Image (cartoon, rainbow, N blue to C red; front, side):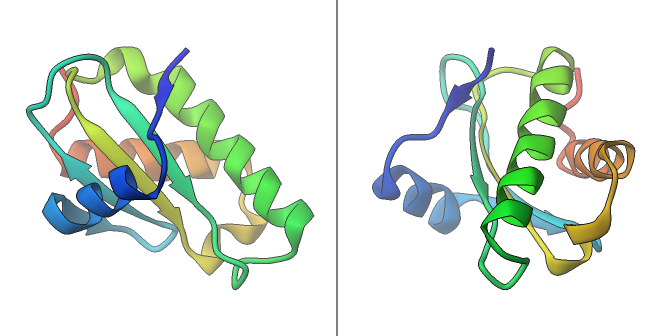
Length: 109
């Protein structure tokens, strides 16, 4: 199981200090070089869809991170933000987008 980012101040730290990279489905902010396991936060705006849609996307993102966390270096703080495009995607597409951003950020072992 992966660890979650805490409350708003922790999110704000990642937004301010982190590097961001994006693809057409997701945006990822990463702060590297801290100690301990990777910690993740997810953000799905109301612009993406209603509550049911947002929760579905969050579950897909969480599952992708759970599946791929073992492939990553440790000590990162990561926020994944869903874009509107991700609304109609299947798990395979979301997982591919997450892996693509992990590669762009050079987080893979």
